[in-house]
Image (tube, rainbow, N blue to C red; front, side):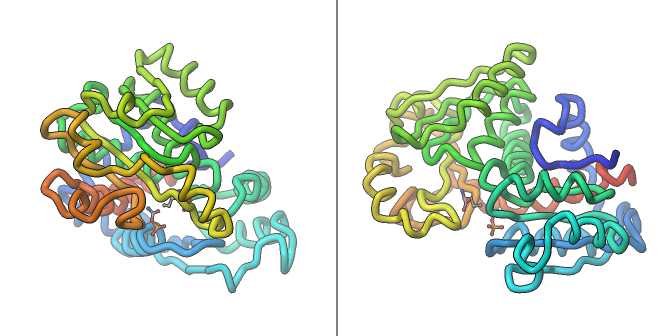
Length: 306
Ligand code: CP
Ligand code: NVA
């Protein structure tokens, strides 16, 4: 069985620690890894647009000595032009691994049944594992610890929050979140995260009131209110998320020097104000940079190339 990163739950606490160690090293001495994946070709199959995931994976693969082929929404048409299982079996014979960005998580799971090489989830409706690993690595860099800082997530209970819940659980961290009613994270994900938390000592709590979630937080994190593919729900979501904006007023409830995170892309004036994004508290672009380094470590880890 090849190793995959389809969900954060594919990792153990030890694997997360190992990936963070490797990330530190890859970031510090990238030249030591420039032939680590030489001669391997990876595919990026994306059903949705991307800036960070696409470019950081292509740049990262190039810097590890490998090649990449971008297969965007117009190229592959997974499950439309032909069945997912047929594409997966064919690509198994050409590629050393794939990065998949799909509308439904089921597509990645189906692909995984037939693809005999590593698969990395580059975002589905259910999870965004590379993002959450880069976020916690950023927390590690800023606080020299992953378990003591208190992270507050204010926003939608979907992919990004789900993966953050799992990483928080695995590293024994504290994650408080607030979502609107009916936009809570999946009950199955919360249950699983709490089960992991029991073993690692992590603290996970959810509210509908952002003030409660943000109270005394060291980091305040948000994500867009309208995710890719939800554009038709825009008007309703704007109403549902009223009061959930990360602005100066809400940040008054956090620690005095609390940092601000966002996975990007941001819709300034909706989930976050322009002044907060541009403030010295924002570590948003460090997070984006760390996507590159963490994903290189993930690739090395999954390909057993370090
Ligand atoms: N954060 C993130 O995954 O960005 P992209 O959608 O631009 O890849
Ligand atoms: N929740 C967002 C994350 C983008 C990186 C989306 O799914 O569009």
